[in-house]
Length: 131
Image (tube, rainbow, N blue to C red; front, side):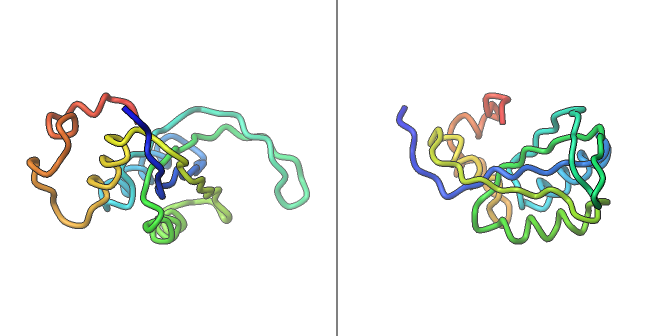
């Protein structure tokens, strides 16, 4: 099936531990600011902070959302995050599977969505188990 252009976003957020990352991801999905949040880690981060080189173990969130929800998502991450300056970086999804992009929109829609409105794979709960 052909890919289609998208105005959706992938947002990268790092957190200091798995519990924090999971709490942020869960809140974003529960509040329909994100369709999905994958946790990757632990990862090793090397960065400059307050003129020192730091090394840390972190968890990376890979979040899928609508472009129109990015500002609200960024605000919510800042409210939930323990870092003074959390990493919140969004990149445009250039193209993707039409079914997956539709699922992002269905999952971030305001209000409850009736199963009959969802594409077949989503309706059966078989979202291919990959995000």
